[in-house]
Length: 143
Image (cartoon, rainbow, N blue to C red; front, top):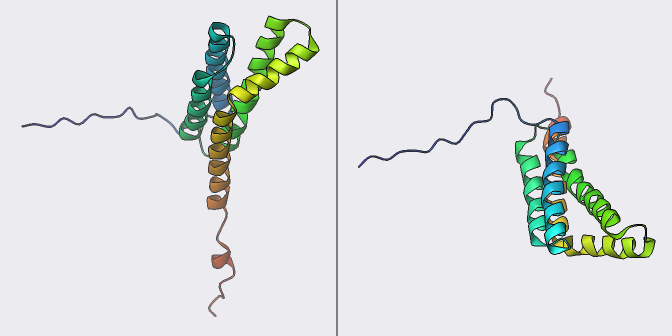
């Protein structure tokens, strides 16, 4: 009885830079949310799952120091994408654009909240780990 192990593909290099994280997150959010808004006439679970996945992907595949960008980009990219889609579909009706924009944000609010909490937790955790310990700094030096 022989067992075969499956090798996972290794990333060559340290990971994505900040610009790469922003471009990939924005691209995936734009494609999937635009498709869902076009097919269903509104955002829903597919867009929410994509928001969570791109946040996790940006944190996982980004270099050290890209956690801030990974946490900030998804909500901004989704807001801009939904605002552009609503503007193009509704025309220049400010009241209708405002109501539809708030509805688009509310439909994915739980996913935005979960991904934002995860992204900010990982960013703050990285900052805390990179700081030197206060216990080591205040230890008395031996003469």
